[in-house]
Image 1 (cartoon, helix red, strand yellow):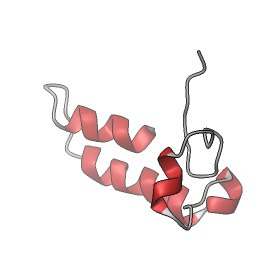
Image 2: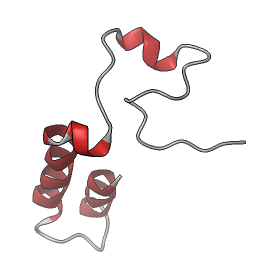
Image 3: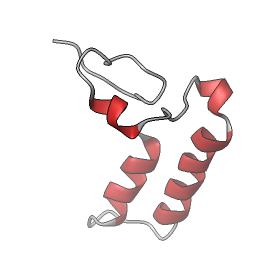
Length: 65
């Protein structure tokens, strides 16, 4: 989420010269420390959007109804 926020800001009027580098660093932190954050990629990409698979290690953020 932090990486996405930096990218969003990088294209806005409030942009800072370090936004893209900060986005990269934030994304790499999650990628390189998957065990720390409890994240990983699923073996089959189609499983990401499969019904009933709302809770998996590839989901970083979700909203409940």
